Image (cartoon, rainbow, N blue to C red; front, side, top):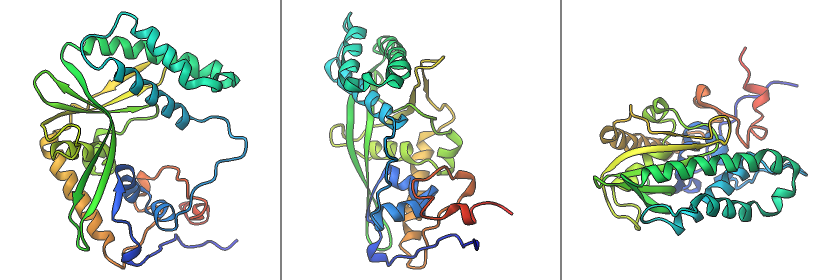
Length: 287
């Protein structure tokens, strides 16, 4: 067939969203066309027929189980039977999925590995850090030329250290973001959550000093879990720099002539749910 040009839709400003989740902000940077299809055309990607339970579902279940577990033992030391409690919650959450051979053979043993790691880490951590809020919702208002834009987040977890500083924690079963990409502004989710926290945007918590960003990688593989705490990040400069970049991003998309390109930063592009709609195969390959 004839090659086609990269799509570059320019919807009228009145049709452009004024409310973004932190993951939508990241999509606007990495895959604007995908965000356009989802938020402006309101198209939902279809799941393949008879699809086996996937990685995203596993991640959702693990988040849910850890959240339920911590909500029963947020204060004080962990109970002696913490691991048994966590495993029981896991069995309940996986439920009928445990009948699927792949889940029984791969997911469940991995969950048990994650559970052991998590309880050990949590026991050791309680001496200097306590969970303060779980699955907590926050908002941040960012000024833009056509009026303020509201950014929302649901933080997996926020801890308070004994020195009073706060830590934003994200549970991931996949790859964590790189510090360099957070600094460059390509992966703004956690820096935005930190900015929200500093500004008092999480009503359950109020404003505070953010002392760290952590990603807890929960794989259940050869390494069951690991905490990435990004020592290179200087939050005192990262938070205002992220806010400046996001304000500039919203200002750009407030211009009527700004298109929603499918691949504005090719080095940052991953697989997108709307790549087929964008006909990426026809224009996305290099010469």
